[in-house]
Image (tube, rainbow, N blue to C red):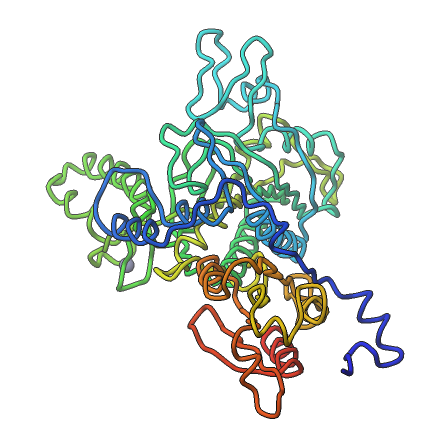
Length: 497
Ligand SMILES: [Zn+2]
């Protein structure tokens, strides 16, 4: 058996760069898992109906596949299966943020209340310490930050910036806390979640608008890579404030936001934002003493072209704000112009709910056959299934420590992971040979491992005694019967193209 990495001179180079892995499934920790396909089907049926019951397909799939484990506090422990996927998603986001010039920082979760009083997001009167959705740590004058506009603006205000430092893009990926009245849908809506938040600083509003477009484009590129049909929606600036805001939504019946879509000019508006527009419209119209009856019609028509709007539900996965001097003014965040004068910075802020984004992928890509992942963030690329203990196939191919163990290793050195452009596949070696091949096959179809390589009956059925493996693409159920060498070449072709 000739191994591809045995060529002189290539071996070390490839081995140095390869980042694949082999995980023995019998040793993997799945928590208190109970897998049931019926449960997934029932949830999908329920989701299609109108119901107030908290449920989502991604929650059922993630819990039953051993991805997450619930606590009575409506929060979740993330288990190794989902952590593998989350790590890939984080790397993908880091790459996109660095590609546009982002520099990573980490700000603490516990931040001084005084910052929020300074920005005016929290009243400085003793008896008015409540702010909607924010956890305040009483007596210590701290809060658990849901966003970091104040902290980052304070930081930048002390950093002696000049025009040569601008535009400045700072971002972080940390856990955020929000008082959700109704946490639901597993990781879709939680009180504690992983978020990527970027804060940008520019010389003026014009430059900040360019930055705004730049970051929005990077978000669209990211969602495309995740195979998510995300749409950009005009949104309300809300409690964050500022000049302009857009949300990125993935259309789904589980979504909590109502998106209005114009078929005529392709504009998308969040109903909240439209209400705000209507309010200002109302004031204008009242001042003109026009008939207010015409307003009722306006809530149903496009603010851009007046065509009839259609309602859809969306899950918000990203948010962008053009802040202007909303925070740089109270924190006196300046830069030195080329003329040696101080000038206020114009800001933007941009968020992605990382854990929500991951569960949204599962929510919208999965089918009644099981979980489906975007190819770039699947927890494993391929699963290799060993024959059942004591079977004829096992007698031919050997147990889990011989040829198959090497085969798994070989696979882990093939193909390519696109996220960091290094070769190597993540192989799940299903060595639970006390179970039948059929049962394990089903298990992987449900978990949505993109490719399965099965050492089943086909091992015995090849011509001239050549072993063949059954290779299945879970996405569409397509099958191939390939030899050992053909399987490796197949994986190269699939993951390199
Ligand atoms: Zn329109």
